Amino acid sequence: MAYISQRLLAIGITLLAIGMSCANGARAELSSEELAKLAQNPVANLISVPFQNNTNLNYGPLKQNQNILNIQPVIPFELSKDWNLITRTIVPVISQPALFPGDQRTNGIGATQFSAFLSPSNAEGTIWGAGAIAQIPTTSDSALGSYRWGLGPTFVILKLEKGNPWVYGFLVNNVWSVGTGAGGSYNSFLLQPFLNYNFPEGTYLTSSPVLTANWKADSSNQWTVPIGGGIGHIFHFGKLPVNAQISAYYNVVKPDFGPNWQIRAQVQFMFPK
Image 1 (spheres, rainbow, N blue to C red):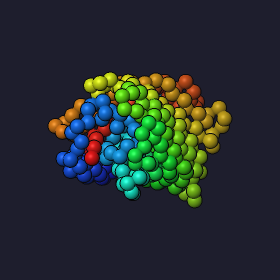
Image 2 (tube, rainbow, N blue to C red):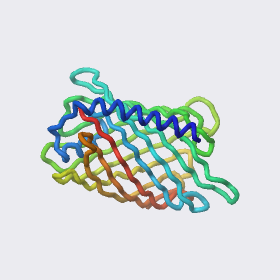
Image 3 (cartoon, rainbow, N blue to C red):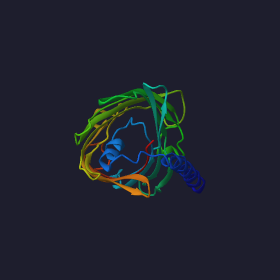
Image 4 (tube, helix red, strand yellow):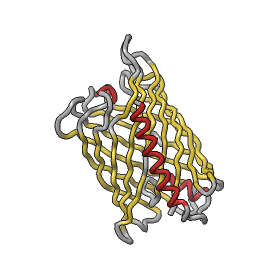
């Protein structure tokens, strides 16, 4: 676990160093509200490094807390004057509680997901991106996920207009396991609608629940459907914009041993070009 933590720290430091070099040429003319809207656009032409911590309450048969820290670097590439390729990586650091009496908490890394979206570079109003998602079996323990690779499609669309305080849309993907390996096959669906209202000074209200379906499970245990929301704000470390937010979600539909609440806290380092 110490080795994993050191590697993650090294990755984080490297990403921040790359971003800091980009921040020297940051678009200083952007207001806090414009930066907030940029952070709310999943296919923005923006290097960012979000650290999103999710605490799932009353998880498992013993009703204990599960914690998942998602390290989510977003790196865009300009393919041409008309098209961008937006890459998004999610590395989950998981603390899994005991699942039966006498069991122990398991700490480690889950499966990494890598998404690539092809998106028009000059889109205004309605913005979209389409591409593919791959699940990479970086799982450090069988209790934290499958050891099989996965592939599937992904798509995002949103409405973002200058002068309009609302930013809304959704992201969707489905991942099927491929090949063989421990942990069994999987077929996983994700839908993340998002709705944000932005105030002039960089404060915003947000709702961004993550709806998931495990198509391999029994019909009564397939869906997790949360409702809720929170608040966020843009502030600065020197010239470096930082997006911070906190929110809470209640699962109105969940598997038998799924959590009933999720508390989400996020810090996102932003490096506008």
